[in-house]
Amino acid sequence: MNKVAAERVNTAYLARMKREGRRITMLTAYDYPTAGMLDRAGIDVILVGDSVGNVVLGYESTIPVTLDDMVHHARAVSRAAQRAMVVADLPFMTYHLSTRDALASAGRLMQQGRAQAVKLEGGREVTEQIRMMVRSGIPVMAHIGLTPQSVYQLGGYRVQGKEAEAAFKLLDDAHAVQEAGAFAMVLECVPAPLARMITEELHIPTIGIGAGPHCDGQVLVTHDMLSLGIGEFTPRFVKKYADLGAEVAQALASFREEVAGGQFPAPEHGFAMPEEELEKLKKGRN
Image (cartoon, rainbow, N blue to C red; front, side, top):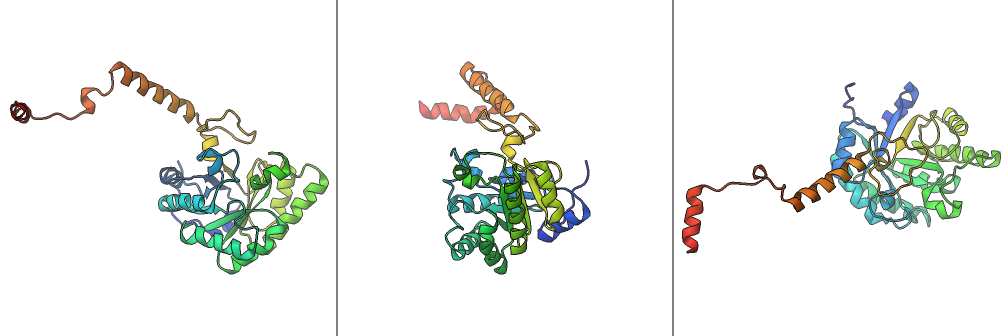
């Protein structure tokens, strides 16, 4: 296994990775132990995604996730990350009403959540928010293509930019958020040729999810790639690197069976008491 570089990942590090042609790795985490494992594995960016709503909190979408939720989970992740850059999602309606609201929300994720950057969904329509945050010293990662916070408006989880007109719009969005000061962007569920075009035209890194192999990096939801979800649906773009869900299910069933059958706990799982002390206890009870 290659030795992981000790240098702390930041915006300059990611920009250098793009220039040098090195691929960026990004995975999600919502808690301290998971973030610690990702960090030790050498993952470059840990995303505290509003996907916490679907994956951890049991919501059908990311819409119900609050800023308090995100601060709570970002704080836990940030405690574990020693090398990886921690990016936290700005949840639904925390940056749409005004640049002032956007700045206040991002500030909480940085100050209270201890994130090193924030991510927000949208293209040209959120450029003023990006500019305000960047002017205030807050690194911003953009997110275009399929934007889960707009899933009801988009009519479901569908590939974006398949038609030329929609593709032109995404190209314009990509350039707009770059010009506004975003240091990187996520491209979600866009055709691979379009993602390649965007990646080649921009000087900031692109990180794909369902966007083909030509982006500067790749991101997945950790629970998806480890098969830790409780649902049956798996997006097409997910590669399952392990089936931990099946292993966990087997372990839980074994625990239930051994407790019910009296095999657990065995003597080696308990603690003895000196015989003389036990005799004193028995005599004291009489």
